[in-house]
Structure formats: C-alpha cells, structure tokens
Image (tube, rainbow, N blue to C red):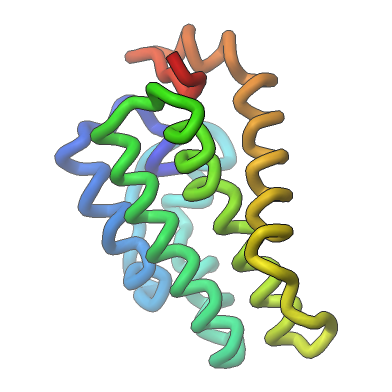
Length: 153
C-alpha cells in the first residue's frame, strides 16, 4: 500500500519501506495512506501487528526476512525506473517472487510441506505479478497524481 500510493513522496516512502520489517513488531505503528480498504488496513495496522506477534518464531522469522527484502527492493525501484527485461524481472521478484518464497517458508515452518525450491517459488510470484501488471497497464498509466510504469521501455 505504501509503495502503491503515488501521493507519498519518495523521501517519505523509502524510509517506511526500508523499516517495514521492524514496524510489524510495533502494534502502535500505523501510517495513513492508500484508499478504500487499503486505507483501513494502514490506519488499523495494529491488528496486523497483533496477529503477527501471536505467531510462532518460525513464521515470524520468515515474514520478517521477506518483508525486509521486499522493502529494500521496492525502495530500489521507487528510485529507479523499469528500463529492461532484467529490471522487469527484478522488480517482479521484489514485489511478488519474494511472496512466493515467503509462502514456501511459511508452509515449511508449519510442517505441512517440504521447502519448495527458490526457483519454483520465485517463478510463481513473477507469473502472478506480470499478470497483474498487464491487467493494470492502463490504470497505472492514468494514475493520479502521477502515472506509474512497470513495463520495460
């Protein structure tokens, strides 16, 4: 939600994303941004923190690791445009491939599954993110107050 809100300046957005993996431990932290249900999520972030804090250590470790890596990657692409296919793959890795890796770690921590390979987990995330980018192409270009472009030049 923080990354997606184009009304937030880079100077405000990057530090929040870089520290997000620590904010999940703080049930007093919140940041008003986004619209509709995303605004509610961010305004009432204490519910997320409380649920996170109730998890077992294996789950918390997996979530903290993935959110730290995602925040750093998102920050990188707030300051850099997607120019090449490699950039496109890297951006998709940070915003969705890491979700696949994180889910695999969570399933493994639960004892329900063997740990999937990083390649498989990342590929699934990239597939889903690229589908979303294609679906949202026109909406992203027409975004107010400024357009966003995730398609390689």
